[in-house]
Image (tube, rainbow, N blue to C red; front, side):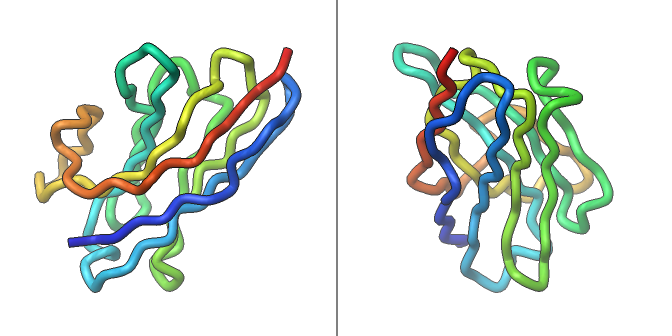
Length: 126
């Protein structure tokens, strides 16, 4: 089981940038696909981005393509989400999560992710 702690959230104006970090504990991090999800008030948790265990493959939600970049540093047991050109509709609690073992498949479903962090709030003002 991987324990996850997110950081880096905050308040930013539209058009600004933030970098989220997710520190993981556990020996399985470097063999685990990792993802970022977000949940706005009154809405379901939605997929944002995911990255394969080695970092060579990524997947993004259409709403963030070209603005957000997911990356990881396996030596530091950390996954990142660089968020640029932020919009008010990006406001949400952002969670990182560890995907269950699904081979080479990178999922976008919360049901396929078994370990979650506590979340970090991102607020984008207009």
